[in-house]
Image 1 (tube, helix red, strand yellow):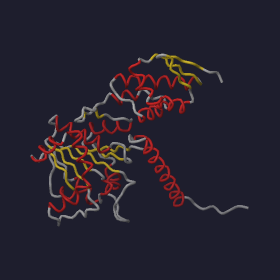
Image 2: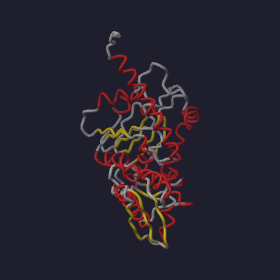
Image 3: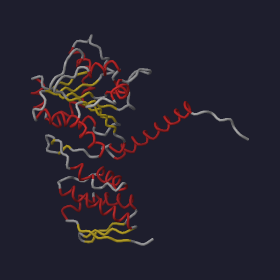
Image 4: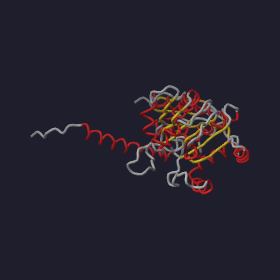
Length: 336
């Protein structure tokens, strides 16, 4: 096979960012695309099979552009860039990066990092109700929180309401508010953490005292009409059909709703149907309601987490296919 070579110049200020510590990112590209990449005083040379060399060059160019925009290149960026390169979609890295939702209190930009996350953000902008479905680590809740806080700061809504079903806490109205709050606070902690990071503890406290930001268990939504609010229902796979219906019928005028969930992480009692599963069947044809499904490809935590999620996805798909074939397939008599 002919050995094809290609040279490219990279400014010294971006070289370390692109190469990674101990050249880890370049080694990752080499191993995946089966090319050899060398650096000679700022000139990067790529050698190997021509199509692989061209893919590597395009990906490195995209990473350089990301670096020029002030991004710190991470392993997730390289891993996802390689996935896109196999589909000749490297240019989507820059399109995704251009969509900045807001900044954290520390000044870090919050952006979608995958095509699935970009689809999710676009759906939120276009629809009144969006269901964000997918495994842990896909940014469903965090990105939803960023969208809600941005809308609140821009005076597009008057308040933010964040809620979760508290299965283990025994979600019953018979508790006194203080007792219930102390029981459900651990289940609401991820929502508090995101609020503090994006909005800041002081701003959250001030708006919370005014009643403009509310973090409460799902039981508190019963009997209310939620107008001019940005409402996020997290961990919706743990709702019952009755709870989901109750929640959806609370939505008032001028409100936006994000419902997140992972059908593989139900904490409901055995035999209890999930309100999220029912909602997908009942609401799928209604306009202004969108369902966005993310997969292991959209996991933005440590790459090992992505591999774990993918392994479970494959396992569960095999189980489902086996069950379907047993139910639907006819058993043929053995032939001799």
